[in-house]
Image 1 (cartoon, rainbow, N blue to C red):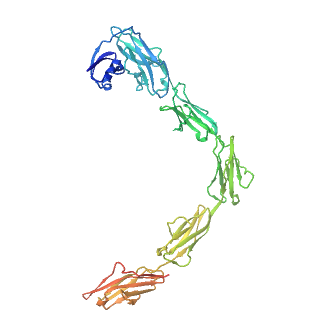
Image 2: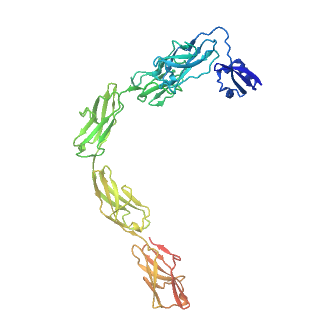
Image 3: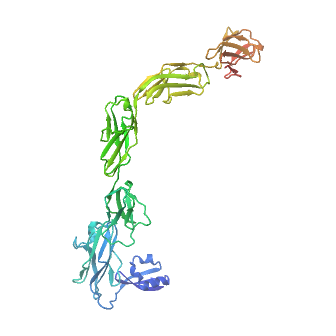
Length: 540
């Protein structure tokens, strides 16, 4: 266990320490003077006991005078930053012991009022530094500096001795200033432009700056001067609001606006209305980007050498005619130069006429064929097309043709089309489409009469209609009957089996099945839910 005496807050304390030799040497060398007695156990874990009984402080050497020393005595800092005003105060070492009862900072502006009690400084000032033996640290820290913080700051302490009140004169002169962007506010495209981030303070030699344009940080060049932004060839994209920051600080210069002058770009010509109908009023407008603004406009029609007389941005046709169709352009100029637009085509429009509907192929249409409908119309601008079947609108695209890749019987009907643009519409004549197809799988129904007579009926859908119905028994080559109906009156065991009918037109034939069963002298009638098998023949 080792011991050392430490002076903390003006008192001498005895420390008991079981720490390393290094800790003991720190206490002997006086490094403890940087500690508060509450911090010692945290900084030196080896400290096990702190005697709180103060020992008398020795007064050695010459008597110290009263005084406050500031270092430096003049400070210039940037708005928003943090500053430390260095300060040491002292007083005589004599008996009876002088005790400091009150110590604080104040400014000439607010008279002798502790800054910590001033609402303008509250939560922004801090000073509670450790004391040195005989010389006491009174350094003041001010955060988030404002322009209004510029003042002369003084430290004052008051003791228990009569007349023992002392104010350090002349104090510390603090100047809080900001950054300023120095530049030419108006420049011409192509020039070299230099923006300087300036301040009245002498900042450290290696202070670096960042630049922002329209709120976005600009990349830094390796060769960039610390406080300058150089635009070697300024362009209109460089126009905007600029500000500068001291790197890693959150305060900036007031924003400045850079305006870039340039000759007109190639202008554009627009037309109103978008679509032009004969005898309507039409306005052509010439628009160009330039700074200063465009001063003169001139209009031309291609293949003509004379200007059209208008010297404004608009060229107006009160009642446009077909012979006014053609290509037009304009030229624009300001004091820095001139430019010419591309040409715009003026084309007179009209409503659709002569609408007709064509079908391909135009002869007989069979189920499965590829069939195309074409709607033709003369219109300007080109028409959109609406399709109808049996007077019902079809959900087809607004295009002039539609193709059935494999047409079906349900596609049969009466078709027509409508052509339309913004100036009017026109309908085609009706066109009938009849899709031909072979008979569908026949259905068979049976009716038992008087317990001994069974009549079977065969039905099938087809276009053209079914020409022939024929009745067969399975595994027999010869037909049993022809016609839509087939009657059985003699029930014998050899009549049990599969019966089917065949429906036929000139597009093909299909078969159906039926089963008749005689059990124990009684007749039972069953039909299959499916065909066994369905035979199909299609004809070209």
